[in-house]
Length: 316
Image 1 (cartoon, rainbow, N blue to C red):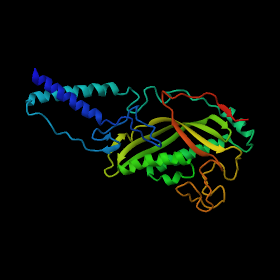
Image 2 (tube, helix red, strand yellow; image 1 turned 180 degrees about the horizontal axis):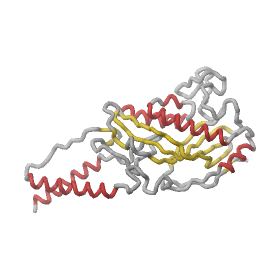
Image 3 (cartoon, rainbow, N blue to C red; image 1 turned 180 degrees about the vertical axis):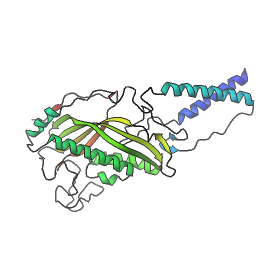
């Protein structure tokens, strides 16, 4: 009886150790929104612990007081538990990686494009909803490819300073740990304006994006897939919020374009680490000259969606 208790205790210890290194809440894609909740392949030889990746695990140890048969019994129980957990998490006919309720799972995000465009045009007649949405898509692609290439300088003109620093820090963790987040076969299935907000200083436009892509993490040196799968499509939903200062008007020649020129002086865009034009020192990532990406949210089943469409918070 004592040996059985020791065996069970050892098994419990093994379970605790295994759970302590499981990759809980490890995200991927730009901003780490894809946590692979809907499935995907995961190489059990990898773990996330203490903020760093570790491809090795220590399997040594044991008790000389237990016989081989008792250890086999303990391992058998452990295998049964693992099998039960695997069966419980195994997705249905949708395949590995398919969301439990399909791509449409989660809260419904209303399309307020028809209401938002004329509202913006009241103060900015040149504003085009179609051109803005097309540009937002281009920004999305630019961010994903820069993330995969681990070269965040490419998105410097598009993101507000705080958001840029946040993403730069997250991407640096991949670089430090020798990991690459691969994003391929990116397809934006749907995009529209979800919300427009104006306060005393700024106006904000939120674009809803429904995206399908492959999203997985691989080891930089070996190419081994650590999380996700190159053969499985991930269905993701995002809310991209852009901002600009009140009074800034659309310039058909430069607005909603991935321009390579400073919007203030017209010089070729070379931006310092502080978000300033290298030539005229204007800070061009504040929304003072044109729209700039200020926030990204991932739409998950628990996300609360504001259905207001248009909101004015002007202090008058």
